[in-house]
Length: 187
Image (tube, rainbow, N blue to C red):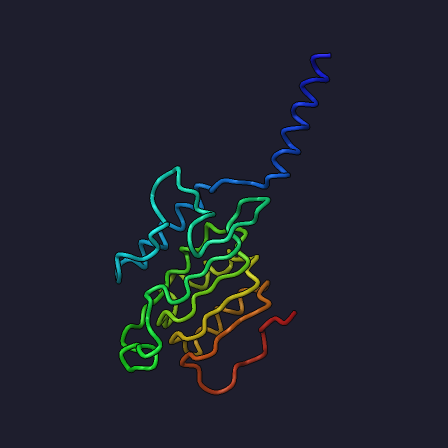
């Protein structure tokens, strides 16, 4: 009778977890999000106020973060216009003097990331030695939005490493000429 009761209790616990979904913030991802915030806060200190370094803070409830309701892993991350540029600023020459280079290794802790929005941030490329090899670890990324940045043709070579990519937005960048189709994957 005792073993049967334990089995039923364990079964009930499993069903309860599945019904309510996973609620929790994986420490590796929480720390990864805080590193991203630290990287971007160098320009403006009021950014991402819900992203706080408190172990009780649930990162799946932070602004711009979406987690899978079953697994709890971060699947969508929006850093669109993180510096809060207005439209006028984007169309001014000053936007092009704000060019920054992104450390792509900041996204390595997000093993289930499916969609990443980095649009409208004056990003001109990846930090040297921290770009292409880090992109390989984003092997589940299906959607990447890089529009309204300052990427040039050199970005194409590293984007070829994203073999799971189904949607890519490179509009309004510093790209010239036609994009090479060779080596780019299509669904």
